[in-house]
Image 1 (cartoon, rainbow, N blue to C red):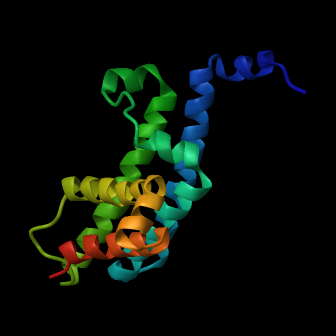
Image 2 (cartoon, rainbow, N blue to C red):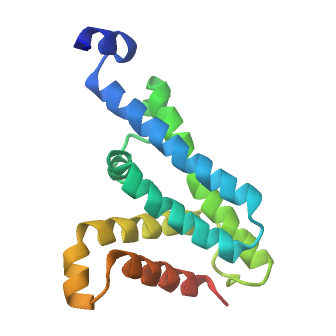
Amino acid sequence: AYSNAPLYVDFRSEWGICRSLQRDALARMEGEMERIASKEENPLRQYWLICESIAVYAKGEPFAFASMLETIPWDEKSRQASPLLEEIYQIGERSIGHIQRMIERGTAQGLFREEIAGQPVGMLYWGMLSGAVKLAEQKRGYIRDSAGMEEGDFLHFAFDTMLRALLK
């Protein structure tokens, strides 16, 4: 059995414990996105692998996934005051960057529309992909009853619809 004392020696607060767990889980997901980006050349395949990795992450790391969608202090002053917040921020930036580069690669290869590019699109797709996963999880029964789709079918539909917005 452990007492609270050893935990608070390392982390000083419950906030630090939670953020540390969040950082570690986010780093695992970002690492998977990095692996996909480095091994898969085809932007369409990369897109589907990123979608799958976000869905798997949400199932395997529900606490971190939920906290990832919450607001954290992102301004430079807050990040400078907390190395942990800076790490979380940088992991998020790299995750968005993986999506952005996948879209840029698809555009360069003539697969995706040229007017859709840049950091805002990476952030938008990060939010849409994560939002679809969250919606499928939280509204599973409603989706089944109203749309006649199981969670996996709904996610495939959502990811496919988002991909079609990118395609030429």
